[in-house]
Amino acid sequence: MKQKCFAWYKQPHRLKFKILISYLIPSVTLLCLLSVATYFASARLMEKRLLQSASDTIKQTENSLQSFINKYDALTLSYSFSGSVQNLLGQDLTDYNINRQKLDKLNFESTLFSCIPTRIENSNTVCDIRIYFNDTFPYFNNHTRYYNYRDAQDEEWFRKIMEGYKKDRTSFYLITPAENQASSYGRDSFSLARVIVDTSYYLNPLAVIVLDIPHSYLDSSVSNTNMDGVVNFVTAADDNMIACSDTGLLPLYEESLAFASSPDYRTAEWNKVTIQNVRYLMKTDPMKSYSITLTTLIPYQNVVKDITVLRNIMLVIGVTLVAACFFFANTTADNITGRLSHVNSKMREVRTGKLTPLPQARPKYAWDEIDELMDTYNYMIGEMEILIETQYENGKEIKNAELRVLQAQINPHFLYNTLDMIHWFAEENMVTEIDTAVNSLATFYRISLSNGKEQIRLKDELAQVEAYIRLQNLRFENTIQYNCQIEQRFMNQPIIKMILQPLVENAIQHGLFEKDELGGTISIRSWHEEPQLLCLIIADDGVGMSPEQLALLNKNLQIPDEGHGYGIQNVNSRLQLYYGADFHLYFESRPGKGTEVFVRVPLSSGF
Image: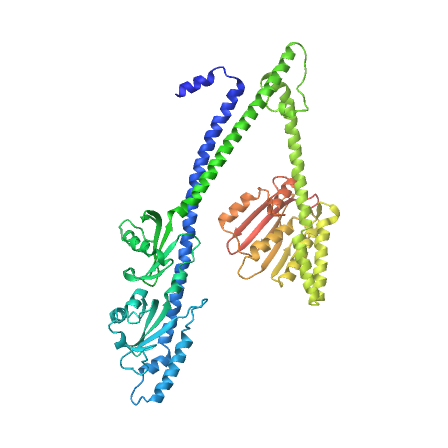
C-alpha cells in the first residue's frame, strides 16, 4: 500500500496538485490527531474538575455538619460541668422543701438557656431540650421537658447511651430520627445527647441532656449542592438515616448500601455504580470524630453532558479547520506555482537576450525564488534585508530603552501616591512634612528629567535615591534606614540616569516590605575592584532569596521585562546597551539575611 502511494505520487501530476496534497495530508492528519488528543485531555480535565467541585461541596457539607455537632458538643459539655448544675444535682436532698425546689428549678433553667441557645444559628429553626434526671432526683419531672431515667429505661437509645458510658465513659451521643420515632418520644428529629456526670464520682451519671434538632433542618443543610440530580445521605452507625437531601429518593440509598459493602468499593473515592438502570458516581465519606457517614450520588449523565457538548464543538471546529486547511493549501499552491511560472517566463526572456529584472515593487517574489535567478536577485536583496533588519532592530531596541526611561521618569502611580500623601498632610496641617515631601518630589523629578541629558553625575543619582527614600519614609513612618558609603572621589563620575533608584525601589518592595516587621536598612557603597571599573553595591537586610530564586533571577536578567514597567531587567539592558556586554547587574542573597546587587560601570578618565 505504501509503495503504491509513493508510485502514485511520483506520477507526472501537475505541480500545484502535488503541493496541495503535500500540505493537505500532513495538516489534516496532524489536526485530527491534535483534536482527538485535545478532546480526550479536555474531557478528562472537565470530569476531574466537576468531581473536584462535587468533592469540595461534599467537604463543605461535612464541615458544616461537623461544626454544628461540635458546637453543641461543646455547649452541652460546658453546661454539664457548670458549677450550678453540679451543685444542684449533687446536693444533699434532706429536707428538700418546695421553696428550695422552685428556686433550684429557676436557677437550673436560667443556666440551661444561657448556656444552650434553642434557636439554631443563621436559621429560624428551634431545637427542643429534654433532660432525664437520675431516679434519685424526681423533683422536676413534668414529662414535657424533664423526665427521670425510669421514663426512658426501656428505650433502645437510652440503653445504648448508658451501656456506652459504663463501657468506655463516652458521654456524647447521636440519636437518629429512626430511633426517636421508635421511642416513646415519637418525634421526627435528630438528637444530640450528653451524659451529665458527677465530677466528684464519675461512675454516677447525674442526668442525660438531649437536644432535638428538627429533621427538616438537616435535610436542608445537605441539599445545598451546585449540581442537578445530586443526592446526599447522612447516616449514623448501623446505616440509620439521619438526613437526606431528597426524601423521594430514599430507595436509591437502600440499593446503594449493597455497593458500599462490596469488597471492590473504595471509600472516600468516586465509584461508578448502576442503580435502577441509571449510572451514578457514588462516594462515601466517613466524618471525623463522630460515627457519621455522608454518601453522595451524582448521575453520570451530569458529568458527560458537558463532555458531549465539547465533543460536538470539537467536531464543528475540526470540520471548519479542515476546510480552512484546504483553502490555505490551495492558496499557497497557487501562490507558489504562479510565482514559478513568472520566473520561468523571465528566464525564457533571458534566452532571447532580454534582461528584465524581477519587479521590485512586489518583494514577495524575491524571498523564495529557486535556481539561478534566486542566486542572482536574492543574494543582494537578502544581504540588504539582513543589514536593514539589523539596523532597524538595534534602533528599535535603543528607542524602546529610551521609552522605558521616559515612562519611569513620569511614573503616574508613584506620583499619585505621593500627591495623595501630601493631600493627607495638608488635611492634618502637617506643614513640615508637606515641605519635606514637596522638596523631595521636586528633587526626584528634576533629576529624572535632567534637561533631557542621558548621563548625570553619580552624586545627582544618589540625591534622587535619597529623595525617593525620604518620600517612602514619610509614607511608611520612617521604617527605612539609609546608609551611603560612596567615596567622595567618585561623586562626579558620570553615570546613565535612573539606574540606582529602580534597584532601591525593588529592594524596598521585595526585600524590606516582605519581612514580618515592615522596614529595614538600605545601604549603597562603592568598590573600585579593577582599573577603569567602578562597582556600586546596593544592599538590604530584607527577606533574601533561596539559592533557586537567586539563580533564576540572575539567569532572567537577560530577558526583557515586558509589561512590568521599569524593572531590573530594563536597568540591566540599558547598562549593556550603553557600556557593553561586560557591564551588567549581578545579585547575591541569603534567605533571612538580605540581598546585594552589584552594578558595574566604567570609570571615566581621571578617576
